[in-house]
Image (cartoon, rainbow, N blue to C red; front, side, top):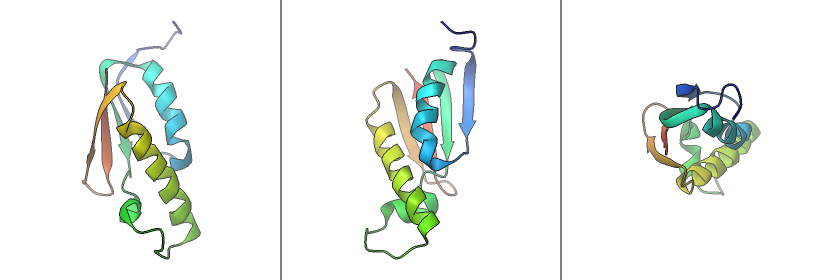
Length: 97
């Protein structure tokens, strides 16, 4: 086991959306069982629910796709219990199992 593995009770992630899955994998090693990982902006200005045909800026589109991929990844990750809260721009809470 590494020096910092299972050292944290709580982590808040507000970072580049493209790497959210990478962060998640790293954090699962650092957060204790029963600990919480929180991801910010997981609704991404509501774009995650928009049609593929909607027109939007390139930056919104790129992060929309990354956020959708992350949301699907978390929803299927059996190592955590998760919920997406529609607070602000979306907050996903994950409890490590």
